[in-house]
Image 1 (tube, rainbow, N blue to C red):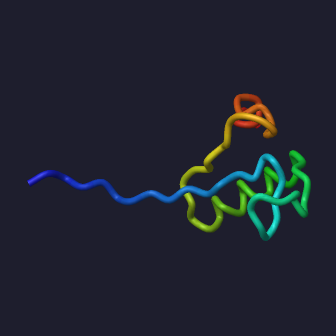
Image 2: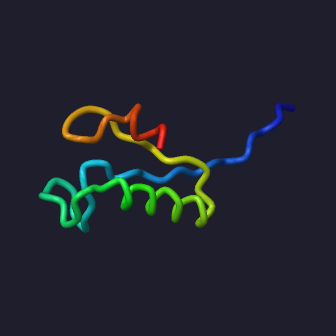
Length: 67
């Protein structure tokens, strides 16, 4: 029998802005303070990692991940 790993859950970091709907202009523009708050809130809620999107028009993922 193989050993099973525990399931891990991650949260999405909204580096292009945030809002209620997908595909429309964001209701809240991204800022470093807001993204840090999202990441810390996700961690407090038990999420183990954040998903950082790549490509345009998001913040540079490598620089953001270092924060």
